[in-house]
Length: 426
Image (cartoon, rainbow, N blue to C red; front, side, top):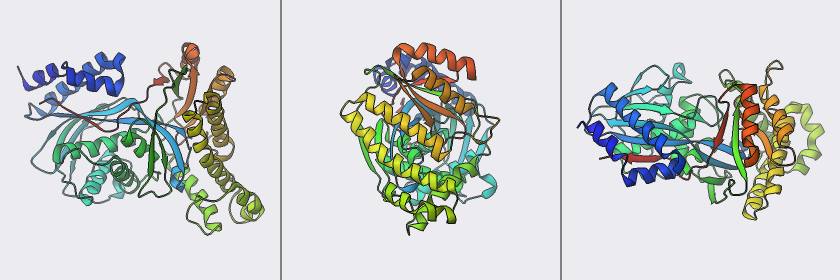
């Protein structure tokens, strides 16, 4: 029996099966066992039989509240989900990283060079170097590895495939060369820095924090070096609702400038108040100076500032509604959040000829008004909407959305209770 066969057999053991049930839900254990086994086989086919092969996973995330608040020291409500980036990895005795990711060309990166290369912006190579650089700077050992990778967090899905990959990479280096005990806050900070500086994409800390922390969490980014994270317990399914994301087929490619403009414009308003970010500014202050502000900066910037202030106040209201089990109030706050994003933040569409997200929101309101909730999900402009759908209506909701945007455009999510995960079948 080959080592791969031995590991595949151990996937059927009690410990591995319990781990898979925790990450993906009991109903998905059989499918995930087959997925893990196929990835182990793929690793052996590509890299040969290895003495040590370890499996690492990191989840995508859903943003529930706090749309575009994290980059201005705001609050968010988010959760890791049962979709993930998964890799089978073996350590090397040099600093070379070889990665074969399903659907992409093989890549090779030398970790002797951890510099930022602008010509590599937007590539996985840059993220590998950035994560390794961050871990080395934080005092962790790094080394090369061979990885076979697959992901159910599709690029452009709005569930943050980049954060899942980044957090997974912190897990790989932590698990292979350290003790796999890195604090999740540090995982998130290293991942965000890799995305900002090495990958060249400006972003807040929400995506990486939700992926790294696991579960349903509310995060206050008042101090980004020491974000305040509170774990929450709430079972939406027991209350009769499914979380459904609708992918409308839009791509995030070419939209970096649109994303970058949001924090830039918000901070332009903050500068008028003598601050670096909008945190702490009130609606009353914005009302009082709205006329003056629009003579200095754009009307859109002022509206985006209003969105931030009101959205930041909405997050603790959403958290309180969940803690007090006021589901109807919570759903209305989700709708209010989505309306603010559409009207004031203006991150639903770029091109008047492609308003797929607008149409998805229109259809959702038609089907869910009075009994569910709907809103833009994540960064916006392309990607997905988030919907709270009564369980009795899920089948019809999915049918309509798939008919409109293509089969498979809907994904019914479960909240995953764990961030970066490691499974070693010794």
